[in-house]
Length: 280
Image 1: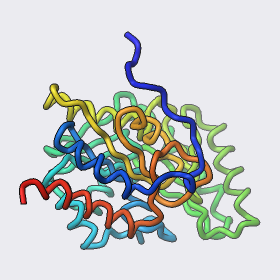
Image 2: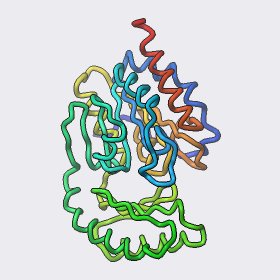
Image 3: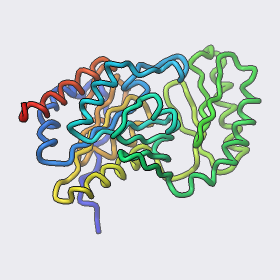
């Protein structure tokens, strides 16, 4: 049976997109007539991009804003971080978490699941991690972050003249260890299992699960993200929800934008207030 949803729009420059604040009435209305679910990236969306991953700490005020929103609609945090790390950093019960770009999920009830087949790549990732660490040991500022289902080669602190060495090392390891693919982000390259899975598919699975609890109401997924890996989610929600890009990349499949993490927090607060208003 053909997919009844319309095709995703072609990517365009974020600078030409309307502000996400213009979409607030539409999103708030969806909370009454549809199964609204808000999906939030972590780094660059809930927290500013930091020099190293461990420095990206969720502020108490932002955590409280997300907690308040989760009291009125379904909320999930979706990240390339390990699931355990993500859960520890956000530290909010009753919401869903998708780590490793959706390969591992903690549902709102606390139950955990892993995409079938992902665990078969653990040995390959371990071998690749050893090779990548050896190749990058002498590159200043380069750092290998070992995650359960990915290897991240960070080069935010690497001099520009040495960045090509990081790219070459990642490519060489991908060629030496079968079953892994290269993906990119902001000053980071990752080796991930070569599975047909990404943030977009994770968001769709979570949105469909929400919909199954209220089959008479269609889902309305809203996704906020800032990086290349979020584009899969923007494309996925374009047909029946809203993708919001944070910052201004040259090309994006999102349909609205916000300039900064500060605006994200303001927008989440405003959305919560609009949803709470009818019962006030």
